[in-house]
Length: 204
Image 1 (cartoon, rainbow, N blue to C red):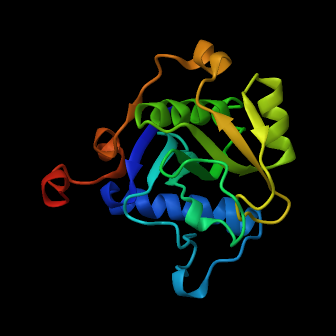
Image 2 (tube, helix red, strand yellow):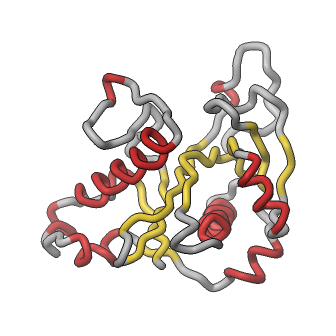
């Protein structure tokens, strides 16, 4: 299992297409989420938050390809509904979205992705992560000692049946399990996507 850290602007086209297909299978076909017509690409899922500078964590194996993903977006109080007070300072929070993992590939994959997210956040000076979550994910958090707390409704605009949580950067239980695991950049797995090495020069 390799955890790839990248931004959309740095993804080779083959990896971007694979991510779009994975997201479509999980969120559009699996969860029934709608895709805005102006962003519609057959068999691919994208939304208005897919900016070039948004950071992604992708779980990837040679056998399955992408089998998990997570998007990390800088969160700003300006995104709150009018009249809602912000509980966080501007520029110190990331919103974690499009969080998915194939449990049939690795039952601990959501926790591994979360570990890398909090490590990356800490290195970037981020104070906490916020995310919409599901009862199943909350149950996994509780069973594995993940430090989190509920957020006031309205902080995150989420899909149906999801609620918001604040996830601490300090995660002692995850650190005990996963400390030392590394992240990769796309270039380190490029040969597996059949992309010419020359892409590294042309694509910069």
